[in-house]
Image (cartoon, rainbow, N blue to C red; front, side, top):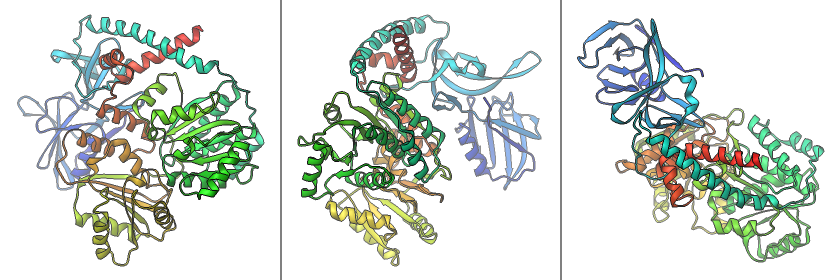
Length: 612
């Protein structure tokens, strides 16, 4: 595992702010006074760091934008020990499965229990020093691990808001607790498998994969498939070739190509004589899918229709009739597809987009349309129960984490609302010919806010879009924004599931502390869809405390493309998973942390599957 290293030397030109940002990026915590590994403090032009780079903490003294001195010092007496010419600082974060872990985070060692990760440290080893991962346990005891045994660690992810007790090293309590929970997990795995085994007993004809159709769709795709997309398409084709219904969750960021994967799956099911229904949470998203999918399938003998409030009543009646007779192969729609008058001649595949936006009753109603229907659920940030069931190995899971070629990470700032700064950000976007989303989620005052900015940007085209407008009016506004007739769109969260507009690359969110983490992540996904650098500004007016602070901090940290999976975990960590599987299992998850619990459940499921 290669570790990122920051090298600095005396006389080197470097801004102190840049150095501090790098320390944050490397997982160091800023404190007033150093007391533990993985910390740094700032006083005037002096930055003190407690890392594995030196056996003692190190001070870096700046003179303007130049490094003047580097020296180690005694942490207790604060006296200088040794002058240094060069300093190498290692990235203090570690990667555990899909999760970044930084100093101060809780981790679970399979053999020793819950501790705090304190960062990489140097320990005397023979005649030299060797790097270890430092874990702090109860009573201030430490465990030092070589990085080669990192597989024994998982990040601790709680399912409630209370902090767990640290384990005591040398005690038998952890081992007894873990073994007891493992027995309970094994029993649960049997129960869950029985439920899912009933579905496994349902058979349907094995589908034949038409390689000519696949070749045609591949040739007309405007982009090059990412490795994750190709892998997911193959996984779905394997599912379709089996004689059992598929139930697969596909996780991928907004704009990472989930729709294209769905198109490939839909085409194969239709070629085999089945119909396909695509369920979207909003009329805007439904229309976007309808336009995209119609365009993608135009070279194939497939009839596509849309059912939503955007469609006239008489056309809806005709579409309902043609679905029943089998004249329509693929229908895209909103909750309209769940109405009692809808029936299919031969529904083969149900695709649920943004699954987390639909209630349990909605999904059960859809699944009940036909018990042998294949199900493909798409999500950027799945809800805890969905994520948990998929991670446990009971439900098939695919993840698209590779960004499309040319896509850049979105630069994200969390800051107090400042009207002058907001004007500056919008001016920059207007000057480069781009568009801006301004999210003001109060319908009563949104028009007044838009009017205020019309006075400032008199030459810009400014419009308003929110959920309380008529469907026709909202549709017109969104169409104008997509056609670049609007420069600044003042909007509500209606844009959460919206249009793919490559020229919209600035997002301003007012009162961002009022939103959930997954929702903010989805909203940020509205920008950065093209090759231009995108900028998001999440603003707040009142002092940030508690979970509001944690949500925005997580958003600022998760700027890497394809972070939706990590965001789902962070959301779970901040909000707690709630009672995912009943009181007893909730207690077990609390004891082990959700990730280790899920791993053990996954192992139990695999073991039981291999024995059947």
